[in-house]
Length: 119
Image (cartoon, rainbow, N blue to C red; front, side, top):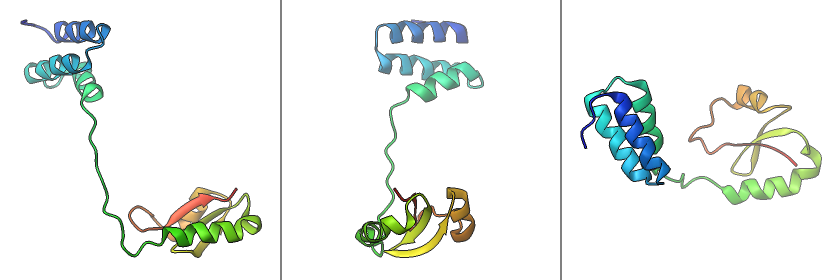
């Protein structure tokens, strides 16, 4: 089919969604973006309907997850209700909130630091 306006692409995508054909709706939305690349609603449709992207982060070979688990088991009673920062079974920080721990240990992404509330 041929669509002349962004709204026609959106209506066609909506029809496919009503039929529960997500892939067809995504194809229509992405085709619409080729013709109307700055149309916000078509951008939204294409983004939401796009196939999922799987990403992975290589595991840190020096990370001791079991050490963190053991530390939590051994120290649960003492730190219950508090936030902790742990790395390789070693306590790095204790606080009353996630933000308080981050202020002590810094950003934790890809550092191997576990920040959690102890229950």
